[in-house]
Length: 356
Image 1: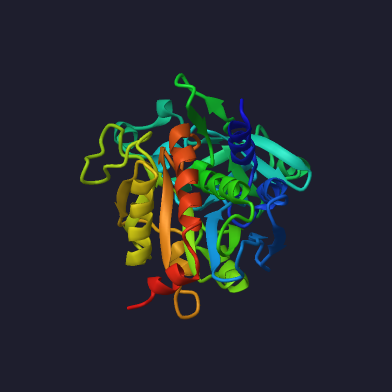
Image 2: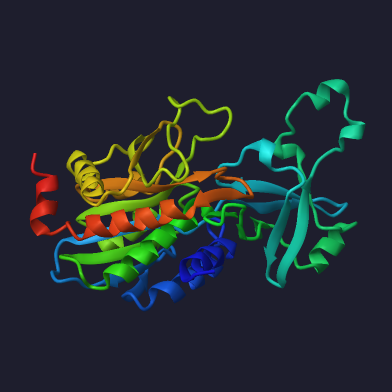
């Protein structure tokens, strides 16, 4: 296991659902503190500032640290936990999955359950079980046992999923690839550049993206960027049931440049700069259009009078589930492209991005 593989393992296995990012924040700080000055906004986003050869422009690479998960909302008299989702979850991927309830006394393991199929009517078997009909079973038989285990209403719940190297040793599986891969790309870019860029570079790991881009808004107030690159994942469409016109993105096909999402259209000149840089450096580049989702760019590009933004993603299968899959070549090529673009963002280039 090399250093990057070990980093991906560590940052994906760390817990940190939206609003409860303490553990992953501590992990990311350990990787970033040698790359620049560390600060935070008052919502909890982590910011690393690295000097370059010029004070201006202020270039931001932003990735969100939170992962999708759940929160305890009710404890039944029989000792079962009812939950509310933090982030977008499909009902189909939840049943029989292990989870960890993060309590003030430590982690408590449970499983997501529902009425067993043996007791379902023929009509009920044809229907997808809704989240509202599910529960988490921690092995308790009463509300008192749950409370004695340390579980409280409002406690976060995190998927249990260990990092794994798959049959192809360049493919990895873990929870939280969205968006710990983006955080990893940001970390590696700062470590590679180490003051060798014509700007002041900021790496930001935001909180609460999965519940509405909240840390991106507050973090942008601290950084006040002149230009921003959002470091994300993108949906790999190379699985059964997805047509090329829905998304042509493939794993091991290279970084993905987003041309549109539900909250942001990228700055055209910055988009073209990314395309040209990929060609010049012989880096494969894919393109996506996401009509049903958004990234932190949706908040950052509206900061003050506007910030030129673009989104670069690592193609990933099965996001927003307990296990997602990525390819190491895509990660490495995204870091290469990110670093090459940052080195081009001098004062004249950034000024031209908004020269209408």
